[in-house]
Image (cartoon, rainbow, N blue to C red; front, side, top):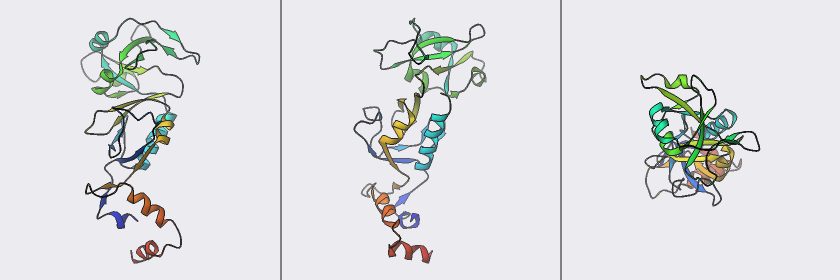
Length: 219
C-alpha cells in the first residue's frame, strides 16, 4: 500500500490534518486547519497518525506537565488573584471570564503550594517542559516549574504545527483526538488530494481487491 503512494506522497514528517469537526475545540483562528502538519504534542514528537494517538494517550494517562519560568518573569507576569477550590477539589486562581489566563501552581523553598494567575501563551511559548523545579535549575537564573492547575482529566496541551503559531488546547485529550482527522501521508505536490491515501487504504482492505493483492505478490 505504501509503495503505491510513495511516488506521490511522503511520510515521517508529521500528521497531516484532513478534517476538523465544526464542534472541535481545535476550531478557531489559532486552532488547526486542513493542510496543517502537526509535529509535536507537548514534548512528544509526532511523525505520523500513530504517534498522534499514542502521544494523546500518554498525555491523558500521565499528570499535567509544567513549564520552566524564571522567578523574575513569574513576578512580572503574575497578579493578585483569589484562590478557591472547584467542586472536584482542584484549585482555581483566575477569573472565570478570562480566556487567556490560566491558574498555575508551583512550589518554592518555603511553601509547597503557591498559585499564580498567568497569561498562558507567554508562559509556555519560550519555555521548556518540566516535571519539577529541579528540571529548571540547569541555568544560573532562579526558576520555577509552574504547572497548570486544571480540573481533573483536563489538560493544557501545546500543539506544534509549523510555521503557524502553536495551538494551546485546554480540555480532555480524547476530545481532541475524536474531532480532528489526520493522515500520515503528505502530498509531494499541491494538486494531489489529501484524502486519496485514505480512500486507497480502505479500498485495499477488501480481500477480493485484485489490484492491491497483485501488487503485494509482486513485492
